[in-house]
View 1 (tube, rainbow, N blue to C red):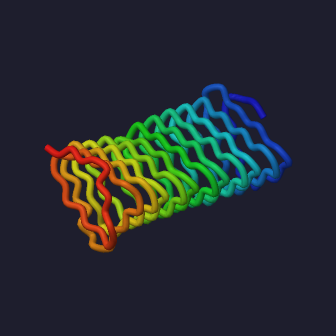
View 2 (cartoon, helix red, strand yellow):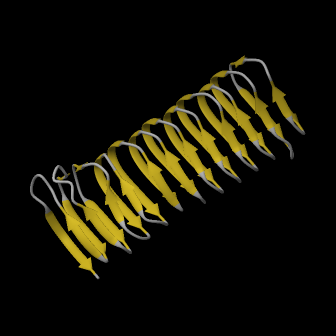
Length: 231
């Protein structure tokens, strides 16, 4: 499907689907179910309902919004020149790029998740094989990640609870927690403000490298500081 705009009000079921607009919007008013690849490219904004696909590539020149769940067996590639707002998502892997903010409900990713937002990122609960996230600021629910959690956040950050294989966090401002961290492997934390991880239930299974203005760290078990630079 090619045209200036596309508006599909009824449910769509297809083996594969490609829809493109030159400058206008793509609007899906009902469920989209595609057995293999779905490619949606909008020169303007895009509005989606519930989507189920084998693989998904969706790109919007402006804002991208979804009302409904996203279920993708393979890779979901999502990009927008403006903000992105998605419903609950269950995908094989995820890459998401937003020129402005990104808001996602609960996110379940079997493999790797990579998210980059030019504005604030707001996420519900996150479960992933690995997570790489860059944003101007971050608010997120409980995180359960089998591998590395890598965060680059341009504002103060509070997390919790977090269960991860490894943790790497770079924060502009203070870094704190609202619930315990359980990090099986190495942790590297860099903050321009104070780092306060004072929950006595914290567990850090590997070495911790720390750079901060000041720090308070508590742990239920051994704590191995591989290096600390304060002040």
